[in-house]
Image (tube, rainbow, N blue to C red; front, side):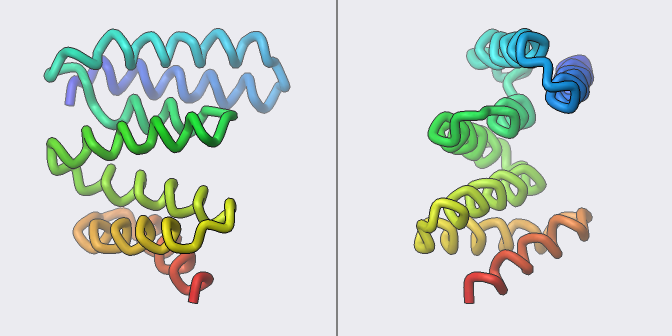
Length: 138
């Protein structure tokens, strides 16, 4: 992954969190727009396009339908490069949204996929969160 892009996405995520904590909609929208532009600018460049930017954009989307669309896009990019960490976290995010929306079939599908990928990652906290979500669905 391009380190410069990762740092930019990370910085924008921090600024988005700060803006959200301060209830500053204008600042939030400015940084969200920057992140969206970064995603769109990098989308056609295989060396710059990465699921982290799309997952982050989805994470900060207030419109859940849009978030789902962005997570699915991120999932496709993660699958294309076999990015197991991202496959686990994106599937978990989708499972959570579908669970909250009371769409159990889709929630279970994504939770199971997330769990399969999580077996091959070092993030123990994500593994626990996925297992807890699966347990709550049974």
